[in-house]
Image (cartoon, rainbow, N blue to C red; front, side):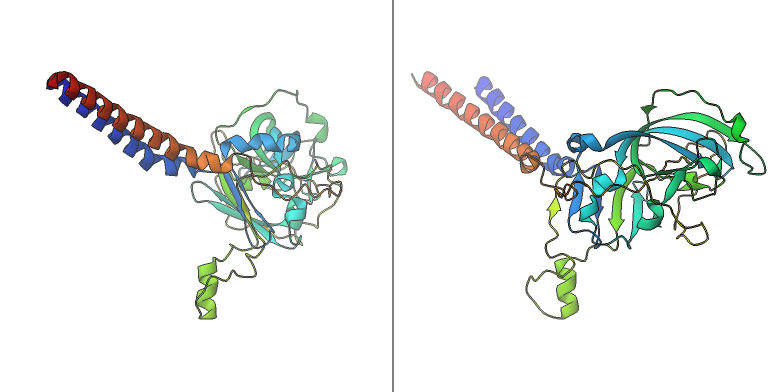
Length: 333
């Protein structure tokens, strides 16, 4: 009899474990690395941890000049993904939208598409040597050069000498990088390098079908114009081709300034005020690579914890039942 009780207890423990797995699995499965959405897109892009490999040819190493809130000038080498390749140039309804970036800790920053795509890298902090540079979502980086000046003056170009080094992991990735304003080598762009990026909204947040129905004062499930034909995808295929950034941006006075910045000047190591450079991406080869597709196995990723848990429950119950039946037959004989 004691063996029978032990076996029943074991079966109950298996069932309890399965219930706990079922409770935790949905939360784990629903955590994307980055969400890109908004009324300015034809399609949302949702990137899970295993999806970044689909953007392989959007990966790049770029150099960015920056100046933080304390007027420390830096040269950064960054490894990551071209921002507009991930979004998809053909996925944008217009170039006139603003883009809002949100970090996991609640900080946010807003810039216009035109300003993001019209920034420069100054390798020697010399305006005559500026190069257009595109924005990136960075994962690795290295600080190649730092210059401190209490009055915010840039270093003498002849003194800007640095040795190239391999990039290392960034503990606060993914991080936004973009260049400096035209002819503004003391532009404090590093202040707006938002880290632990979680969400990007192009235009406004998408209204839900429920919200639109309430506005119209009627029932039904009709989708709003903003959401029609705007399918949400699990992840995207590799986006637009890499950019070489040929466009120029307006002077700082005429360009939209970032809003709601995460102003985090750190006197010790300036970790919270990093920078990256920006260039205008190419439009691609006509094959419409900008709009992302559904990731292979995306649905399976969401369903497999339920399937696995169901299998555990079934095995536990079946095993307990078989044991009980055999044991009962043996005792009755």
